[in-house]
Image (cartoon, rainbow, N blue to C red; front, side, top):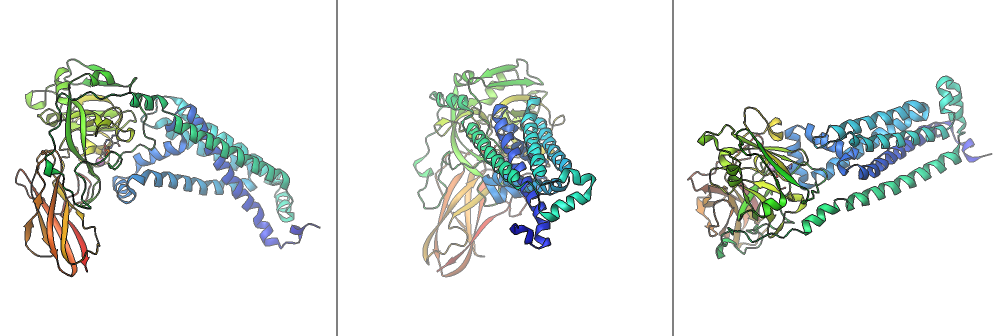
Length: 537
Ligand SMILES: Nc1nc2c(c(=O)[nH]1)N[C@H]1C(S)=C(S)[C@@H](COP(=O)(O)O)O[C@H]1N2
Ligand SMILES: [Mo]
């Protein structure tokens, strides 16, 4: 007599659905692993998790996306993918339990979910081939077959659909092909793990050509170098944001679940559209051999909260965009040009719209090829990205750019505008306290309060600090490094014991005082004064 035959009826009745759930999880795992491996052959972006994730990002309401960026920052995408896998796991358990009684229905359910992946993958804006459906389809077929097989091992599931008593009998007696189930399950788990691991490592190694092309880039000396940073433009104060943000520390905000790896040797940029009398297609070499400018420019994200981290200042090298457009015969609207919007498209299907007037008004709008002395990092848009001083990133800073189209604001809304953000978005004057940190407990006595303030393309004229409800006091400004960069400031404070609120505000060079009025980030950037609460001990 076997042990389980003596078991009470309750747990035994649960055995089949429990094993069904396990089968479902295994089938889901097998499906994803197969898809992962297949996506290596197609392209990493065609993996169902990436494709469904991308579709989810695009369908997420702006407020939720903003919340996700705020709370998860650069790991927002990891959180999203984790969430997708968790949801899939729950569905897989459900389909497994279903399959333990209705084998075909369970397997059909897996196929249905594969269809969702396939539709998402082929519907992505950067999808150019129906082959993008393959990873999802192959994964679903593998998963469905496995679930069907495992459910079969679970006993007389198939016949029980027509003759329920057989199913009940099988369930009640606990009689099923235990050996077959265990062997199939273990083999499938091992094979899936291997396929997934191989897929992952191959994906990691993909983009070899792009990596090689980046390593081969030698940035020429710019014809117009950046102004030397005045000695006292970069303060040495513990805790302050350095004047130049390093490439690894530079914030990253984009919708790309897989960082595009573009081969610079085959990359092309097309310039075309309304009023473009001489459309061109440029290679990376074409750009490298043009006259290059080098500029320090602060980039900020419209999703940055008051006091938030999505701002960075780098030394960029690139091509003056206005000159390039002028060569193509483009005139700004103020000179009678028919196009007022410049739409940039990236290799991953992102679209950004920039006012042509601003690009051509004399500011250093550029197609950047270099960042802080090296080719652009892949995360920041290699091989080429756009930058326009004074405008938020989402209306100006297209990474992995491949197309520039002259059009009008009336006839086309780019990605973020379709999702409720403003068509035009100049950077709002902002100031931030970097040190002391919120809830810091400094010692009574001299405490250095310091941070950065920015009002790109207008410049910072004055920064003031207020302690509690006291008077506004002028902070010391670091030397001026130009109106397109942020400016550091410091304020030596004689801190008395107790709780204190420090508040900062800036005035830009047009004389405009940063508004106290707090607004949300959507639609055109947060406003309000940053303050920090500390306890002096
Ligand atoms: N292709 C592409 N370019 C993009 C984005 C994007 O999602 N995709 N995001 C924009 C936004 S919202 C900002 S703030 C900047 C951020 O640039 P960074 O990641 O290099 O800091 O890139 C812009 N360019
Ligand atoms: Mo942004």
